[in-house]
Amino acid sequence: MQAVILAAGKGTRLRPLTYDTPKALVDLCGKPLLGHILDALPDEITDIIIVVGHLREQIIARFGTEHGGKPIRYVVQEDINGTGAALLLTKDLLHDRFLVVNGDDLYSKPDLERLIAHPVGMLIQRTKLPILVSAIVDEQGCFRALESVPPEQETKIRVCGAYVLDERFFDYPLIQVSFDVHGKHELGLPHTLVTMSKDVDIRTEEAGFWHPVGTATELEAARKACA
Image (cartoon, rainbow, N blue to C red):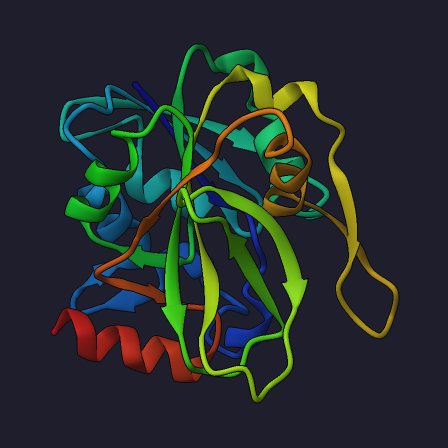
């Protein structure tokens, strides 16, 4: 089984740390973030593809062409325009089912092992924290939509950026999403899965351990979690 790690982002919310260091190499308890992600990959993974962009030379120099005896290949994302666009760049390298994970999240191996037991699925986490968009999951545990939620709603569902997919994903047009006041558009992977979910059951698996590492506050929480 193949794994794709999406690690091309600039890490703008972690500046000044990421001016000279790619987010994937930010230190977490004596090990770069990407090292933790690689170690969390299930044993079933035999082939690793890392999508790189910002300061990619440092990532390639640090991790080289194999990890734990498993080959690593790199795909360059020159235009950082979303996780959907990043995954599309790997299309010609993928076959059958594959695991996709964000390169700026801290995962656990048991969670990812449970995730890949599903034919197609995504990792989620229920939260009471305020978030702008919540995943909608039906009674059968299948992902169906992404919806804006009011702050007062008690429980929301976060998409954790880990998915098990197959080649059918590439049959669907990538969904364009506007993310900021400047009108920047990105091609969203989870947003595209909303369309796919109309034809394919996308099972959800709840994360027992997951920490996004997008801001200084999240980085500090992740460091405490892995200490």
